[in-house]
Image 1 (cartoon, rainbow, N blue to C red):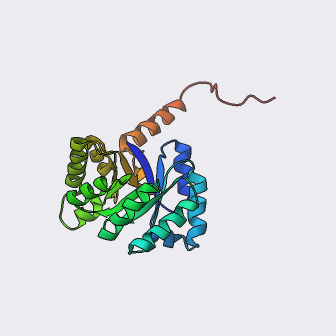
Image 2: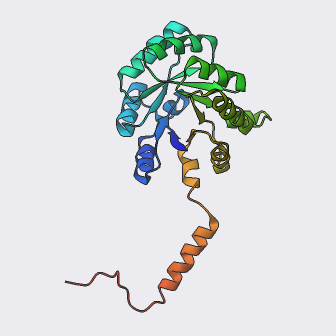
Length: 223
């Protein structure tokens, strides 16, 4: 399972890299807007910080020519760019052209197995099912991940299933059980993976007991 960070915050990317968990970054217009900085400035800093890891940057055009123009512009910013293209008819047409130009594509806003199938047939590098948003409307988001993983395995598609709209740590555990390729998560969820009350309680007890041990081999000896 690859861990991508869903963020536009440079400090979060640096911390995830320092932990050794980071395999890539995804971002979107909503995340970029939170920075209050020009998008190109933020994107190029993300690319530099994450390099050589892949960074998914989203087009905002809705027509084929606009998507192509924006995807090519994004790719010119760094060779670790993955263009995020929406799951629409125009998006699939743009993907077909970008594939021939060897620009990797992450198909976003995927909410059904049919959409995941189309993205794979069109040659997407990644497909991003939004499980949290499906849960929000009363559907079972993980069922879509199961369907996508099974379909891709059945037909040997190379497209990677990138689980998006992750809301909590159990989404990640479930995605791993199913066999998804990637999970992209907010920094807050990544930090939650460390947490367990028994770990905190155990550490507290060990440290308390350590205070009772005579002598401290780690104490600095005055020179």
